[in-house]
Image (cartoon, rainbow, N blue to C red):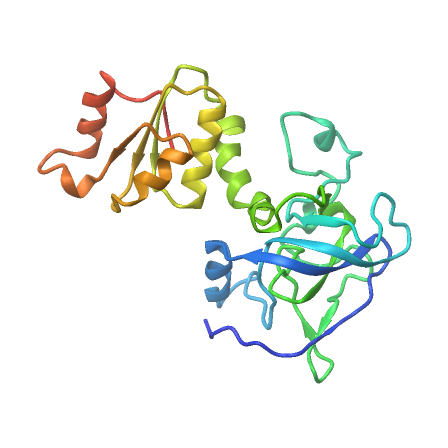
Length: 254
């Protein structure tokens, strides 16, 4: 629950199957805020370096690292992928069976310890295998995706969480169809990504619901066709308004 602080730390060299990355761009996700306030249970591990939406460039590599080299632009991701197990090879799953047991432990597979140390030599905990709120971080290659060096890093940084969560909700979870009708509650980063995913699938009507009417102009760029502000609906419930707009209700609601 304490405020974040900026201080100098030591970042160890990468161990086998790891790379050390210089962070080029990182963004703030609400999950970072949530985890910063957890003060009991196994998830309350402090001190900790937060951050999990980022893009970086490979600064150095450890042993047994194939497919990555110094200078590669990479996207760290908190979901591991060994590319060998049944789940990684399946089009229906993105949860690696090989590394899933380590997902909440936030430890490295080689050495099982932190790569961060404070000025007194004490360990600093990693966060979701990424810890991008640092100039440098060490990431296992099972948590890396190589990017085109031409991709804008400020946009690419959103792919690992906000965009993939929203687009994935439309494509993977709901599997929206062309010509359907969707309602999206909340036009934050994830809500905008849902609309983008729905637009790319050919959804006919995408209704945005938010308390801030100014967001609709931004929402149009991502595919929203209609907008409803519940505070401007008088005595009507938002569900009634949407039913009237769609002739009975939407096909999918997010």
